Each structure stands twice: as C-alpha cells, then as structure tokens.
Amino acid sequence: MSLKINDYNFQGKRALIRVDFNVPLNDKFEVTDATRITAAIPTIKAILDKGGSVVLMSHLGRPKNGPEDKYSLSHIKSEIEKHLGTEVLFGGDCIGKKATDISKNLQPGQVLLLENLRFYKEETAGDAEFASKLAQHGDCYVNDAFGTAHRAHASTAVIADNFPNNKMFGLLVEKEIVSVDKVLNSDLKPLTAIVGGAKVSSKITIIEQLLNKVDHLIIGGGMAYTFVKAQGGEVGNSLVEVDFIDTALKIFKIAEAKGVKIHIPSDTVIADQFSNDSETKVCDISKIPSGWMGLDIGPNSEKDFSQVILDSQLILWNGPMGVFEMSNFQSGTVAIANAVAKATMAGAFSLVGGGDSVAAVNKFNLADQVSHVSTGGGAMLEYLEGIDLPGIAAIRK
Image (cartoon, rainbow, N blue to C red):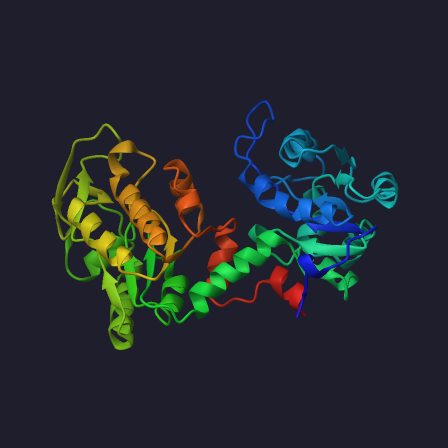
C-alpha cells in the first residue's frame, strides 16, 4: 500500500511533485484556463503546511527539438504564485547544476518550479538516467498528475524507482482514483453511463468494459447515428462509421445478454449544413431526410435521458450529446448536464471525464454541482477500461 500525504512527515524535506501544468496560453503567454494549476494547489499547500519545501515539475505543450521559449514554464510562474499566494523560484532548467543547486538549498516553505520536462527527449522516452537526475531534486516523490498517469514517462513512472520508500499520490490523484474506483466497484444501483462524442471507434473499448458494470448505457453525440444505421434507420448525411456497424450490432447483443438497457435517441435536431446558421428542424432519428444531418439529440430524447439519469445512484458522463460548441446544437448537452447536476443534488455520485464533457460542464457553470470532474480524460478512460496505468502502478508497487 502506498504512503499518503496526510500521514507523511514532510518536516525539513523536499517534495518533488509531478504536476500537470500543461495549461493553455494565449499569444501574450498568459494562462487562459488555470484549472490544472488550481487543482494542484491543495497538495502543494498541504506539504508546505507540514514544514516541507516543494519542487514542481511538469511538461507544457509538445516542443519538438529542445527548448522553445513559447513552451517555457517561466510563462506560468506568476499564475502559480497568484493561486498559491507565495513566491515561486524558477530553475531555468529541469536538470543540471543551476537547478540542482537551487533545490538543494530550498528552505521549508519555499517552492521551486523546474523548466519544461519535454525540452529533453529522455522524458517521453522514459529514460532511467534522466529520471535519476530529476530525482536529485527531492527527498520524496509525489505524483499529482493524473492527466499523464497513462504515460510511462521518466517523470511519471520511471522516477518512482528512485524513491522506493518515499513515494505517494498527491491529493488530486488520490481523489481521481477514489472517484473512478467508486464507479467501477460500488454496489450502488442503478449505474448509468452516458457516452457521447463523435465516433464509436474512439469509445468502443470503454463501451465494452462498461457493459460489465452498468445498468443503463445512454448513447448520444455523433456516434449515435452509427447505432441507428445498424438498426436499419435512415440517417441522411449524419456522421456514420460504416466499418463499425457490425460492432454496434454486437454491442446491442452483449447488452441484451448482460441485462443492460441501451438508450439511443428517439429524435434529433437536424441541419441542412454543418453550421450554426443552417436551417434546423426536429425529426425521428431513424427518418432523417437525405441531405440533412443530425447535430444534437431532440427534446423527447432530452426528456427520456434525463429521467434515466434522475433515477440513477451512480453516473459516469463521457462525451457531449451534440455539437455543443454551436449554440443551436447545445440544448441536448445542457439538458444532460442539468440532469446530472440535479441527480447529484438528490444524492447520486457523478463522475464527469473526457475533454468535451469537462468543457461542457465548465461552459454551463455546473462543474461544482457534480461529484467529481476528472482532470485526465485519456487517463480516466484507460483506467475505466481496466488498463494498468504506469503512473499509478509505479506508486503502488
């Protein structure tokens, strides 16, 4: 069993924390969404409050060939200081004498930010020597970067070998694991999974895994039209993955054998072109006229899906119901978001994960009305699929 932050003695120790500060910047290098920074603040403060010092390491973007100024973590130093309420030192590099000298001399209460880990190709290669150089910055290792836990990188997995008795999850990763485990292992019923997004192909593994757990599976978004087509419906110019029609039929059969109720939209908002300015109307989802495409679920589907959600005790939501970025096709996603929030208020446990779902609850100001919003879309899905995530396994072993 791994150590826990709340039980560890940080007095006089340097905690090397892998955070996920891969945040969006505008053309002035200002942080436009600080969610990932604020998510790590409780872990940092907990360690400082216990008399430790903190060394932060992260990647930012995808630099190609070594250091690039636009990917320098120096741009986000002031944003971290703003949310942390204390000065943050900058290492100028993530390895090397200068950065190591600063970290060696850190005093309790001080915070050091290292430069972008991906300025070195050894990071993504999972290089052991690079990991041991990073390890010199800390007396203990804390992984609080759930968003990168599915990568076997030097700073997320390999580095843990340098801290066999002094490694632990941060408070954020702890919460992520508890939340996903609650969905996977709880006896609460009914459990409803809402899966949306554009393509069946990107969600097939998660759907197959969920069929072993859920009582209800709601399918929306672009992927719904492949399921409708599989049942013989007319879907016009809607998005359909022809290669996955047989897969959709297989999912119906597995669900029936396992007693899982699959909910496909009954109606849809259709448009004559992929544009917010297009002509729209509502029709039966299996009778979409030629030349028209479905871009959102319709009002009857909103009502039916919302009722299933309100009757649930456990809810997992991954993927929007329509092209919610366009105002004319966001009604379905708003309805689902509101239903999840309402069910949560009534006592259900709700987990929202995956980039577009997170963007939706943030856009509609409902993030604080669900039980947990996952910071790691890809990592959360792989964990739900039963994949052993390298960043998690490295702490547990």
